Length: 260
Image 1 (cartoon, rainbow, N blue to C red):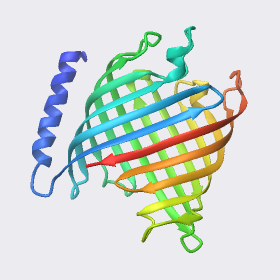
Image 2: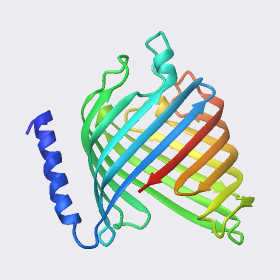
Image 3: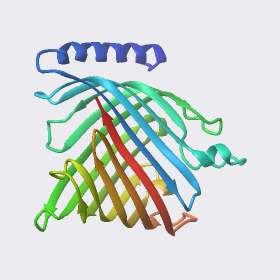
Image 4: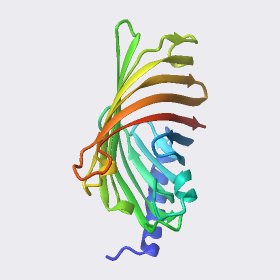
């Protein structure tokens, strides 16, 4: 069957209403959360951001979540640059999603389908969109709980790019300063050492890289979770034809989550 805007919309409504009926039962919880991420990349001279609100229902017993979602990404230099150069994607995605969080501990399987729009006339990728894959997060505490290792990975197929992308992040964090009764309250501040490896199936050099990152992380464990990184970066592109090759960068990154 040919995928049209009408059939896509009807499929979204059917999927959401069916899972809504199954999830909005005794033991089900509604949620509204917003994930946000912003970064300034010194080498590219641009600021980039990602904003993802979700509203829906979850069933803690089964691990299913069903929700409506928006996802928007933007950067400053693509808009300011007079040439046709694109420094980051500028888009708005709107649709519905369904996630499963209990099949494997620490792993979230996700399927989102909807429609994406270009926010910059330089980019021509809008249309029916789909994002399917998984992400995982695992954590280990060492040396009397004073050193924390965090492993984050993700792998997704994104129809907008006709590409499958994956990455692995390994982070070691030493909270030298801590406030609050435990690590899930108050503030943490300390040095952080990270390694990131990324790849894709389409062979774009900007998706195929290895980075070492050293810096400082400040974390606020409050109702508005906030993490601030100041990092010195050294990386290399895997593609031999890449004009960039080995590079250095300074990067400031802010990430967080607001939940109701």
